[in-house]
Amino acid sequence: PVAPRSLPCSLPPCIMQHLHKDVKLFKAEADKAGIDTALLEALQGVTQAALDRGLTDTDYSAVYEAVVYPEEKAAAKKQ
Image 1 (cartoon, rainbow, N blue to C red):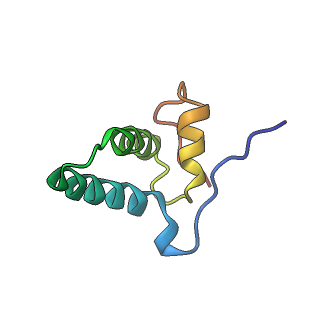
Image 2 (cartoon, rainbow, N blue to C red):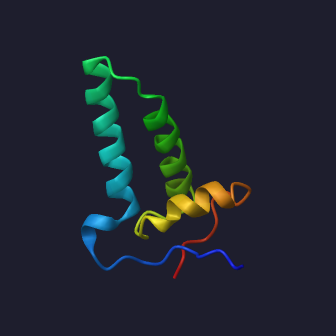
């Protein structure tokens, strides 16, 4: 099967840069509360990888791309 690719997102709340920001904020609060943040650290790395590829304004499927296609670094922005 062909893997889905991320698409530009027309709804501002669902763009990749917002997910990355929210993960960072949640991780900071979890750290303060003494909660294990290992999963959040992993998610933060994946969301950063998506941003590094120029997928800032795409939907959350960019997380899938960052995991399934880790060899694609700094690819051109999706149209």
